[in-house]
Length: 476
Image 1: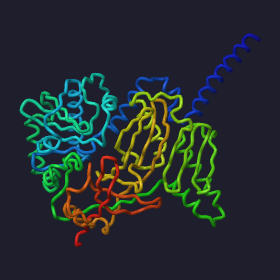
Image 2 (image 1 turned 60 degrees about the vertical axis):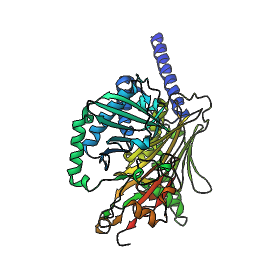
Image 3 (image 1 turned 30 degrees about the vertical axis):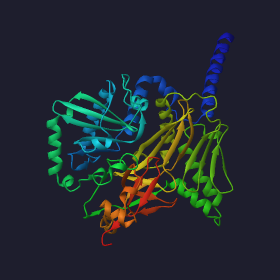
Image 4 (image 1 turned 90 degrees about the vertical axis):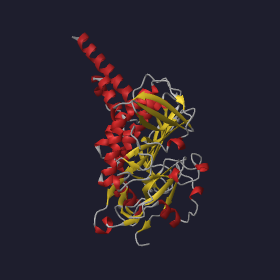
């Protein structure tokens, strides 16, 4: 009997040791963990489905263009055609990367004159990252990065051109899917006759700027409209999540008798959302500027009165290996998902850039709502996360809620979006003097309060720096 009790106590102690070890791991790093026991049930299936979901969410083109050599159309993301083109495009790029690609004799500016289908990614992606998201183990290409690719159907073959920094690579493949000559011709006919697309075609900027500035200062395939007719453009309501707004209201309300109670209540809601585990190990305090902090020995979260949320792992990269880019990206996404639980619109984030140094990788994300980019004033990006294959090292995020305004005063807002109207209106007399990696319609968030904002024209440099231009209102 005593022996049975002793065995029972030993088993309990062993389980306690295992549990304590798991708590210590959790305490050391607050990275998101879907659950120890859940992962043990079927780890292979779980991680494959999770990786696939992440790949489908973030490995998407910023835009897909259809060109006939004269006009350019931007395929709407809410159409089935966008998904079909991307499915065929992924298959083509995967095949191209598994074969021997060669440097092209054509420059990207020269290729911009060709009819075809252009896939523009959100930024310059290292080829190892592309292989990770596409689950490609057969990469034999010499390409080290990809920011966009062009498919040109030609009889029974299709030519795939990949832009990698300043270099262009090409591969010849058998034509398939929507990239056969007959299917491509059918798409051109469809877009020419479609009521929406026939009235919403674009001219790429290389057609009317000096050749000497293309590629160096101005990306040649930026689509702009020359149509002088006015367009209805929506206004947006931009706001930070309610718990952060209530915390900011509480700290700014110095006369309120319930100030401390209101701060504690809002802080608890924020804390329970952004910290996935070991809540009781975190202490809360305000600094002299009323910025909010949650911290334990290894992790510090800061909620700023401007709406930004920051995270820092106190030991930095000390003791960590840099690791591979795939696991590092997954760590970044885990942190992103944790903090963005506060926001209703995290699904509008897109991956806008990847950078790396000797110790870690950095990933940037930005908001896009119905095709239009949201710019956070004073910052190049809405989200910046630095991570290794082991953990997130630091992060800075701006949770945001986005809604389209309704009502006649917003629906009837009309603007002249012709590119030459915009540049002249903003004092740019010579378009050859601008610097633009990308240009698009967008909106600007300027403060922590709720804002109703009108549309602007955004010019973005390769560095991510953005210049905001006013649109010309109809009647001006």
